[in-house]
Image (cartoon, rainbow over all chains, first blue to last red; front, top):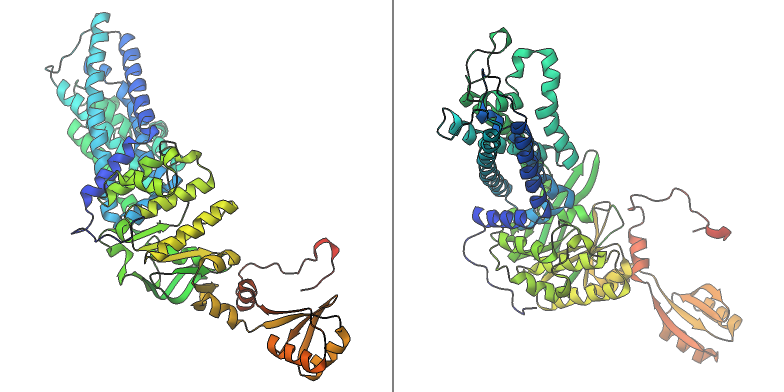
Length: 267
Length: 312
């Protein structure tokens, strides 16, 4: 043990220090490899199964959308990843160590959100491209039409799908901030994103198009008439841009509410 | 130096900490003593900025915790032995902590060595025993080599060897000039570890003093006397104005006279003395006396264990 308490360095801890700590945290948790691994495996498996079973019935066959189908499942598991980044802190008590080391909560939250956003965007963009190419490879073996990134709307769909999946993870991160318990947060996320559509169908067909999974499937992943009239009763899906914007608003809502609670609550 | 001034925290109708004012000076171990539920942990959480006081302040070297430039380099706190992710290794837990305050990551291995955990640095912390978890928590407090250290019930659940290790560890830190504030409900342990005491009950300050003063303050002092001339001695003591308490074989407990006065009395009266021992109240006695009525949860009736029929 040193005999003299060291002199303090200049300045104070900053966002970059907390970001570095968050990166170390993510890299040293086994659940990171597990949830991301499951996301890759489940997402690509679904893409392969769907494209392998694809039958081109001529009208309206969207090979880009077919090849991105696995990203819907990826959205669910990446949501679990997003939730765990915050709820694991609470369930383990690590949050108290975090706040004792860096008590300025806005800095802590900014670092966490930044690391979560960058990690999930980079990850899901890569996965989106892999899913697209893998799907096209399977489709070409089936003799159906295939797409390239040069096909109309394909690059846009692939890029936006990646962003959309990352936004799902951030939405889930927000639920984690609000609930603080892993089970409650995942239940809220899965409930809102994957169960609510089933209920909404019976209430209002018109409102269904505003739900995340419908935006993802019919607006963001689709290259055929996105934003055009087409659905029953002339109710078409939202345009990709509007849909993505709406998803960003959803994520901002849970993140905003979660952030306010994070600032106010005792740790 | 830690200073609490009129520190108050309420949970609904309950006042957990009630206008608490005290100081924790450097270079000493200050024990924070109180019954369960008396507000010790809440007070420490407020010092560490985890809970926000309803009024009053807790300052570290004159600053609120949230305003410290480099918290880990100024304050080391062990409030919860299990405040780590169970799947992360001990070394990685310390590495991310070090990163927060721009401390070189190799410091993780140095502090693991200080607490004797080098051999399990790569093991998942969730597999640690309570004693090892406490050591990991202590390693974390030392990462930034801070001048102020807080420990909440650090010996809870430790075996005798672990307790002894913690005691030496805390005393060594204080001897280096650091401020050491350690809470416990184990009074006997505090009497061995602490130089000073801050005693609270129901969130209020009961005493802030040295261990010796605290024991003396309870006011009870007696002398144990063993003599074969029991009845003659009792009569002589009585006429000298002393109170003769418990009788146990040839032994008497005498209050109201010092050992010297009893010895002189024996010499004058020609009475035999086989043993004469001044009894000071233990820290435990003093604590019980001063926290009477301050215990939050107390059995409503005194249970007579094993049919002894004794009433307290």
